[in-house]
Structure formats: C-alpha cells, structure tokens
Image (cartoon, rainbow, N blue to C red):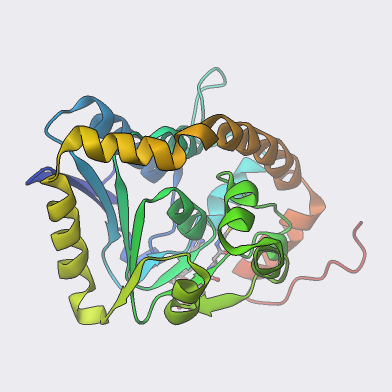
Length: 262
Ligand code: COA
C-alpha cells in the first residue's frame, strides 16, 4: 500500500490520483503497483465505467523514479524473483484495458508520464502542461509500446524527433500533433476532465466498451509484443554504463558525458 496513489470511485468514475508532489509525482515501484491494481479493479468492478488518471501538485509526473532506475541496474527493486514487476503489470494493464481511460495532465509529463497517455482514450491537458520523453538522454529506450503507438499517431519523423532529441513540447503543440484531445485553462482542467469522465461513465457501457475495442482491440497483441521487445532492451540498458553516467549526472546536477562510451 502507498499513499502516493489515491484511488476513489464516484458516479462510475474511478479516479487514480498521483500524490507525490514533492518529487513531481515521480513513479516508484509501489506507485506502479497501485496504478496496476486500480486498472485491474476497473475491469472486474461493474460499478466502475471509466478510470481517470490525474495528479496532485504542479506536475503530472516526472516519470519513473530515477533512484529506482539506478537501483534496478543492480538488483530488482520491486518484486520477488518469480513475480512480474509492478511496472510491467501496469503497462500491460494499460494495453489491455477494456474500459475507457482518461488522463488529465496538469503540468509536466515526462517519460512514462507521456507514454502512458498513448493508451488513454481521452487525454486532456492544462495550458501549462508539457510533454517530454528523454529516454535516450538517459541512456534508455522508450517503453509502454510507444515505439509502435507514437509513430502511428504522429508519423515517423515527428515520433523520431520526440524520441531521439528528448525535446519538450507544450500543450498547444501536443494538441496539434494529436497527442491530446483538448487543452483547458489550468484552473478548470480538473473540473472539465471530471465532467467529461462522468458524462462518459453515464453512457451505454457496452456501446462504449465495443467502440474502444473497435478502435484499439486489433492492436493489443502487437502492442504487448512491442512492450516485451522494448522491455528487453530497456532492461539491458538499465545495467549499462550509459545509464549509470546519465543518472549520476542527474543527481549531481551536471551534464552527462557519454564521449568515452559506446
Ligand atoms: N525521479 C526521482 N526524483 C525526481 C524525479 C525523478 N524522475 N524527478 C524529479 N525528482 C525530484 C528531484 O530530485 C527533486 O527532489 P529534491 O527536492 O529532494 O531535490 C524534486 O523531485 C523536485 O525536482 P526538481 O528537479 O527540483 O524540479 P524542477 O522543476 O527543477 O525540474 C524536472 C523538474 C522533472 C524537469 C526534473 O526534476 C527532471 O528532469 N527530472 C527527471 C525526469 C526524468 O528524466 N524522468 C525519467 C524519464 S524516463
């Protein structure tokens, strides 16, 4: 159990709130576990029609906790050897969810904070939201099936631009690219997102589920297969000197030096 993810259900909407604002909602293994549990709960609980992922504080999420990444390079941090890691369970649950997922992005979204959005059926953002996938800058590769989903959504050039440069884009650009459905003033984002989640939760549930399956169902196998491939590269890179240097540099607040690696 962690209080870094808060779960509550009302009017058919399960709200999963990232609640680690002092660390920009960076995701720990325990938080992935709570998110994965929430997605599983949604699938089996008939009273949940929609899941809304949102965050407390001024950030959506700064992505995976970098201290966990550093530790994972040495030993698995979140599980017994025979268990599936929480992060894997979360990413698979995103890809296989049959009920709608909505996200409200209130501030910065980094790494998995962006790739998880590719699985959300509706993504709303505040004007201050930013989106960045600095996997390569950290010596890593993208995950969550994003190397399959992002090029399909925005085209290969735009996807490569985001992945290889790790550049940050704002909400207006994200909307223009098709990453998000709608941008709201920051002050009204949460109200607007919840209102839309409640409206969707009130619609005919089978029609909603079937429509989601028609939109995404055929791709599920391919997305899961890509997650597995990305996961293998990711795990190898986590143990690499490239990641060690990148993460040391982050915590030492200096630029990484990859000039002697490779
Ligand atoms: N993992 C662990 N801790 C993180 C974190 C992360 N991904 N992102 C932020 N934090 C922590 C910082 O270490 C800091 O902790 P401290 O107050 O104990 O020093 C706190 O959250 C606030 O972050 P800070 O860097 O001071 O805020 P900022 O507004 O200057 O910058 C970011 C915010 C997100 C741009 C910056 O923290 C960052 O680049 N984080 C790493 C993002 C990342 O690479 N994620 C992985 C993607 S694959």
